Image 1 (cartoon, rainbow, N blue to C red):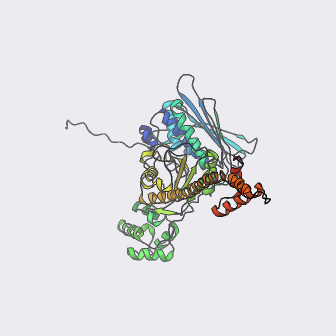
Image 2 (image 1 turned 90 degrees about the vertical axis):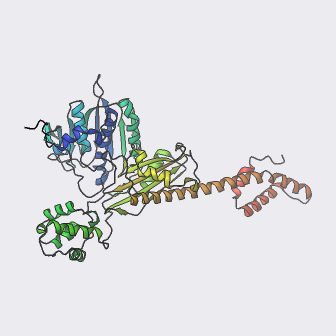
Image 3 (image 1 turned 135 degrees about the horizontal axis):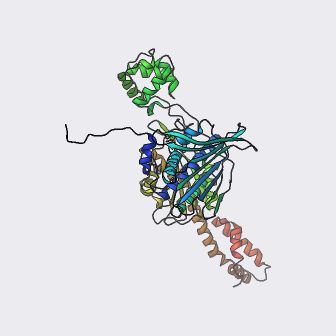
Length: 529
């Protein structure tokens, strides 16, 4: 018998995995956990509203929940589409259960965020999540208290109930009690809400803090980004396992029909061409494909060069009007501009990069070496891991700001937004974007475009300043010239006011400076001094 201890093996549920490794989901400590909980609930609330064409009304309440321990109750209410009562237990009590596992842009990606907050609440306070919800067409409002069975990754419904609507309310109210550190988290949370408000100027957002402070961002426009639509996968983004799953679940009788039905940019002609190149009979059943056949087909699909680009209808850019309205609301700048780039792709995934720039006004001074940068991905503010983000890298390394007449520190803020069906985040925490060449190139082009527009404004402003200086210089001599001419031609009936007017006209014609500006300066010049 071996003296060595036998290895023990066991499988764990997704809930148990994230319970043990909560740090990778952003719940590393009480301060970060409080921030992450607010963020996850707000993102769900916004996805339930603007993604469905509803102007958002979002209410955030953070309260001290225990007089001794650092327990905080976080409640977020929205006026969104609501959740069917039969879905609520799994939506809040089963890790990796989500409505977001479809091919369209959403703020969340993993079906993890709110469940991770539920797990953290169970670990630190033992209190369940509470959910109140109703859809527009429902006559009743539904209430649940839920916790997660960590071993089984299943919801445990502790309490449920419903009551008849007294008014036409729809939406969801979610309350969680967790251990937190408001003192350390409040700056990040307030900054997160502030930056969220910048890209949602079409939303009313109100937050009540444990300090009895009310933060309110009033809706300033009714224009919303167009909602994203679910699309089929593009062949460039397929891999062997994805193709295998699609073929196994396909209800089409032939492989030819299965390709046409399950992929975008694949019509019958393209499908026949792909199968011919892979040496596969178009009439065979999808389920009869062997591993070697699938491997040949996926290699052909990934190298085929005649597809149409992936559809951009699955992504929802903010749009220049929304970006400018948000920057104007927050900073009241003297100059603001925005650009939305044309759709591009990486690994078969469509993406769009947008950039906005604001200068002057109430814009605070930037750092000594770069502009204040607001990073966003799928409308989510990215506050952590700034140093490892590709946006930061482009801003510091790829943009020669002196070429755009900007010297730091300066009253300048730069907004960059990347939206895609699959943003290449560096980790589950979704706080920084990986350095993908196609994405980096589009970020650089977007920033360069708004920077050129700023340069145009600064150039015009510089010319105006020079013109103003020239006016002041010339205006000093106009009264003296008029007086001298009057003296020389005394007795000829010359009027000094007429002389001044004529000299102003001549100077304006020769320099291009408007007469109104010259006359404005003349008011401050004492005639005959």
